[in-house]
Image (cartoon, rainbow, N blue to C red; front, side, top):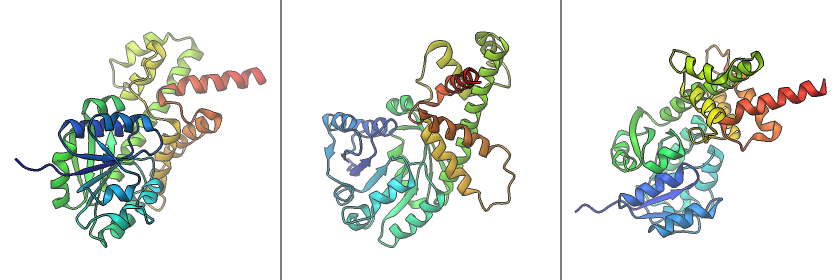
Length: 301
């Protein structure tokens, strides 16, 4: 029987907990650490994981280390310092960064780690925490082909679809473009819903028509499901994270020769929601947030 790789996992939030849980279910030895919230870590320890005190302790004892944190800046914090991955990781360690961040930062970090014999894979996730718990996430992976061959069977423990994209950084670039589409659809859907309200169009009838035609999208279904049924399970992604991802998208293309007609407007929608104090609320609430803001402005006029 082939011995299972020793795995580390940092970032057991909404997406990370389900991924880590399914790695344990697949029989992988897993070391984790508390990052912000102890509850998911305690659950994983109860399922057989081992807890470490910092990233360096994990890096020193595993073959593959998964990161599922909020930004490139957090990844860099975990890598640097005496208690970081770079100072403690063994040569041959594979770091699988499932965070959504800046591709340029990923390439810089990959070069630094490679100089110490540590290999980096960027592996952003898609779908929702519900699919994470069910082991049915989508994942995009990019990096050196020999490393991807080792990563693929491991991530298949918590992913339904594994897409190999290309050289390091290319998966992250694709994810940011994918997020432009999904987050943009959500803004457009929220605006359409509020237009229906303002014009006196029945929301259930709007959903009936749109859901059977080319105007439909997953984002529209999630936003309308929230309004008609109170269901937020399909879009558990915060306004603040949406703003962060769209900022990464804009930085990725700031020196590119491409037309940008909409991304700034989409960014500004999530920026406004965050500035209004709704940064930690889920995207499916966007229509309600902007409807309330419009009503408040009308009352002040």
